[in-house]
Image (cartoon, rainbow, N blue to C red; front, side, top):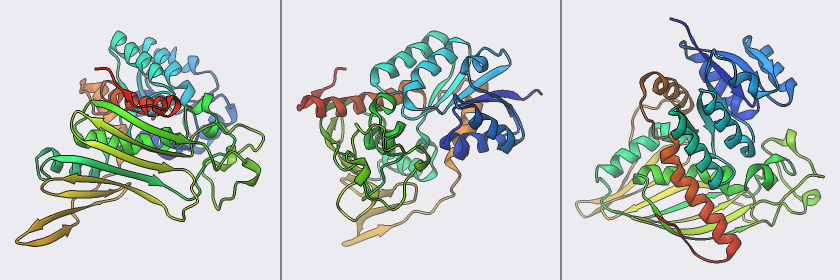
Length: 355
């Protein structure tokens, strides 16, 4: 049987670390194109992986009738444009998180998916994480009783990525720590709770420690090759907020940078029968009572690679028509909540979300 031909659009870190290696592991697919507006990045992929054609215009990829699907791994501002064009060209799309720079752009993507009937999945990769799915199973089965509150912490002392580049330029990224890190944490919360509708949001985002770029002190930097001290810094490096859903309430604190020497990355699910702390990217601990004792335990279960699961599930759903939990129709709820967080901060008021 002929292999499914794939195009990679955007040849940066996430493409090289997650998408490309896992497509190459899948014997049912073949990468035909590596595309990047910086052609040398695409050419480097051709050389590194020993396959494909390097191009700089994504239209060349989506207009090829042999291409069945594309991964969109570009900066956020291009997610909606490329995804909509690809869908309307008859391609299935796996678009990296966040769905788009704004909720309005995410809605355009959802509209294009409904119009074409092609697959549009978003790279909320934790929905394919073994620990997250086991925790979700326990929550949904009632093991924790009623989950009435969730607390989220994603904080670091100094972790601003690519200072002055695309990560810290709002017109390109759509935001800072919330849209870069927070989207993963809040998406895990929504997924584990069964994607409840958010009702109200009250939040504040701060842009403080990265503004004076020449004097920003750090030990290491993600995407340091994109750093530009003559560039732009107009995104949030700290965010805090409170969300009421139709079920649980959620509080969160996130920081790319803070003058506190701790790094935290966990989610606490607080229930009437038990609670759990999920360490981001790791396992979780359950806290409960038994026979008059306080009890905590770390469940043990098989683990699989979440990026490999995501890619394989994307290929499978194209073949079978299965609707995955990362489908735009589900992830749009998180996008709506994220937009409300930014709106609440900008307007200095609580935001009530329409049904």
